[in-house]
Length: 427
Image (cartoon, rainbow, N blue to C red):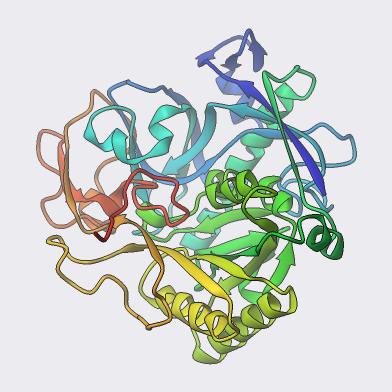
């Protein structure tokens, strides 16, 4: 598959008479966007704007989505959810680079997060650098949490799809091309280079811990092979409420840095063969099935090396280590990418599981470290739940609006794809 990604660099976002892009400025009309959302789960929906450097706090954050559009007439973004199920990963896609749609509102699950647009918290999240269109979805009383999660998810994707289409006929500022050949041809193209694959673990631990692949709940899938460009083109969407710090939002899936870096080395140091997606299940039998299949696929593809990333912590640590040791047992070198929950002093065991086979580890930081977030002039969403979210505690929210909490409250702080600034080295 060959995918061209055309980047339209969005310099600013402003309210306007209608939704349009003029001179790389995204103008949005609040009523125009609100009218897209016809859902009786909501008491009301509001639209706001958050820009880099502003004294603005967005919370509780549910998802972050990058507006995109397929230029081809018969294809659409977010297939199987917003548009018909058709294979993506080829053709031309235009991206409103530097912008995002953020969904937030009354807390659905305790593992939701905070995005600060300035101050110390802004340094821990990539989304503080974007021009954000923020949707505040105020739910009706008495509706179950999983129904609200779905309604908010669909609302965010609908708005992102709508804004993405504004860039369909605009000439991009930059075009990047990515290509992976059919398997045997790809193996032949760079036959002298080590064949490397990517095992992409998706959060699927149950209700509100879901990830969707072409609209299908990934907890019901067995590990399967995807072209890397399918991931970059919207085949995988977030639908979970795991801890904010290491949750893969839809934005993370669309901009997976592991895939991008493997493409950078493709044809130079490695032969990037493809992506194996797998789930993170709850029961041992399911974990055995998935990890056995992952190891079988890496062997079948004739890989020399594998990178494995996980999403979440605790229970998924078992899936991570099972994948690692079973792939290593096939004689294939592995590197795992994870984050740590090592206590506020960093002295506790970092993962819930371990094995000698996991001897090459990249860490995205310790989520238990404390941070003090100063009060902000503007709050988009609401603060009254802060003490109860993952990483908060009784007294986290102070009377002046400042917050003392673990960095796991910050969306993307220890993202296990490496889409963050934290790591550690062994000397």
